[in-house]
Image (cartoon, rainbow over all chains, first blue to last red; front, side, top):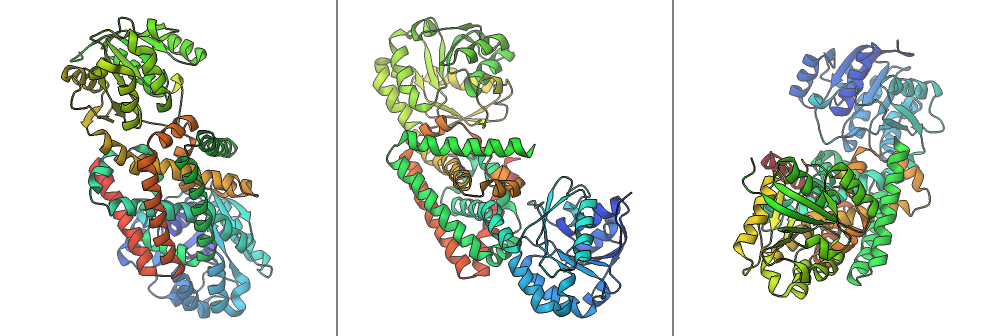
Length: 292
Length: 292
């Protein structure tokens, strides 16, 4: 039995993230009723057919009316519009949360739209992205063992934080608290930068004359290195813009790191190159050992 | 039954690549006797115990005496030394091949060491790297469905090329012919550059204050993107130096591509960013579809 239960849940954006959240709560009977809202009618019908949602709402008002918990899981640049649409219709007790990969820009959007309901907004970021999109990619087990970062503010209601943390824990995730600023800096380094690097590499190679021959020889290393370049262009466009301050700083730091490595290679500095590679391998293997 | 059979095989460097080659030929009874040579005594004893080799040789002379096929599968910077050591002892009919990830530098080393036996040298590159090393990582199935690039020269003996191509095909691989120059340009783009990028990213993050917190939040995208940063530092140091001309050109092209993306993000050019990401995703997904 779940330790907590959500009565009525409304999910804006029933894709991989929103759909899996609903499916996970339903799998353990931790939610009474789920309303799905979104841009794609076909995707919503599919969510209904799969039993991920119980009902489709066509406007923000009917979607959130009576909802106890509202999850906004749309590309981050659309979050402001959704917040503005639902703000007038939220019940006083309703808890609002999101699943955005950036937090300072989402919080700014919430502050502009929510007024006194800002205290009921619990900013969150489940670390469970995948290059798949749409409700067909959703699964109840997506969050098992995954981490969800909660970036609550000093004046966020404690019971609202508890509702959101409990819901994620019921989904099998562990929750971690962080300031929004720290969140954005951390994920610029370990998530947003790698995505930008992978997109840039595949784009560069695809734009070449003879790209087909290059791809024909690409092996497993290239496949894994570029897996994240199959992610949603729209979602990652929004993340790059939403967190551009921290991301640009990381891109600059990386350009400098690459310049240092370039100089070592140009100088045929075998010890210097091996030093960089060995330190990287040791750090990565230590990380994997700790993660086990 | 294999379509061709190697009598006596000598393998210099009984690790993932050399060990898997011997194991694959043995699995289908396509080799009579395998002699292993290498720097690490413990690894060679392990290869003997696993049945990957039948005998350990401690010097180059005894290793290649009577050998019909000699595979040199050592980090590329050691190839010249091995060629020089074995050249005086190769039988007239013996075929020599390698498994180096770079080809022009290996060919130059062969030319310097082999003299008249240069015609018996068939430069080759099996595309089956992994971040694992040592004979324990070797397996007979490693080359199933993989590609092996053969960069024979105009004056390489046709029967020697045939022996090497047949052996790789018996291992389950398909062989592809390419000039050494084209090989080095292609793999600089799709293999050497991604490795340099992954090593540089992990090194940059590991060197930061607060690196542990960064790693703690890294997810599946980071894990796959950096898998190749767990590769052998020594092997990749040698590849970067051996193919530095092509690699430095790729690093410069990539720095420029990254600069272009940086400018789009700094300008909040949503369409421009999405254009890069969408083109990359489409190209990668097309590649995966073709590879199926």
